[in-house]
Length: 119
Image (cartoon, rainbow, N blue to C red):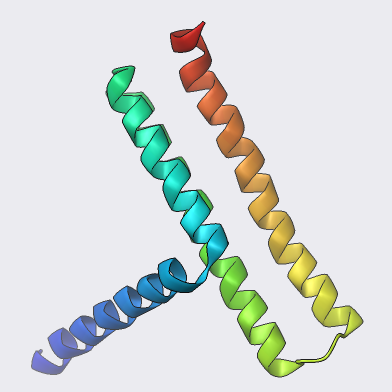
């Protein structure tokens, strides 16, 4: 039991380290964090409903999580094959495409929540 708890604490520490590295080194995550703060401020200003808060927070988590996975995929691809390679390029494009899809849906969700409140 003690080793289970110690292993969970280590896992949490590694997760915090990964999140720290993302926020410290990745411009895309920093941009997403700024957008998250702005939408959170907008949520308070426009007094969005609990359901809208839930959707907004899940959307923020999704975009930042997928962005983090994209960064991890890019890092491992560059580690495996530092030079330009067609297959590595395709892998990176696929990961970036996933971020793009979530970002488009995030914009649509933001529009659904905020357009009626603004207009």
